[in-house]
Image 1 (cartoon, one colour):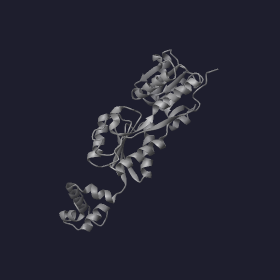
Image 2: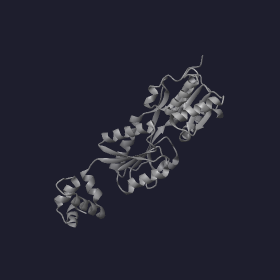
Image 3: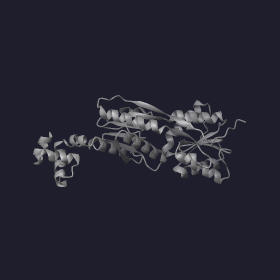
Length: 326
């Protein structure tokens, strides 16, 4: 429907219709609402509103905002989107695949966004052909082949951490985690195998608590089991901080008694009493790759190829690992 046809349908002038979509303040809100409602009924609302508001709107679906890991990714994605003259809309799924699909469908069918970036989800998205989508994940599951993916290469990062510990003489290495770090535990076991280190089942502790409390309780369970390792890799940095607190309370020190490595390289790891060695992400590269890819998909609906872009992790070496070779 043309502007002339829409104006005739609404009983107003073409100039009034143009002012309604351009945000003009010399028409009444009642008239603007009438024009918008008619345009929506006729299926041309998006056509005209998008011409007046050229900024791309990108939805970001994340599992939670309690973790500094996810808030850091959100911040970097938002910065990258703004750099490209876009706007981001945040949606939180609470680690619920049904919510992820629900938010994706909302973005797709109600056309509130131009594209969607989904962080850390294994959901095999339905209706992915309806709206440009990019998934940021550490998974390489084939079920996700229906979407473009930015893959966080945790496997190489965890392998580098285990190799680093082995180089420093550690062969009794434990993993502490919780229900949401299962994938990391699997990659840790694989890294032990790759580095020829025995996988002791007593060195795997999973707690039902999270963050610092989870690390504290996991380290407590590990020490009280009388199967003390020389080094521990934590599922993420907050757990590593909690583990260090427990050791300190027990009169044990890091790294003299036990070495610790975390994951995610959050800002706190530089400022703990013993700065923590951690597996970090290149968030600048990650966010720019994701945003560049989603914008290419938005700009060209023929841009259909399934991309898998790997982003390497890097071991940030600090003071929490002791060389015990001598």
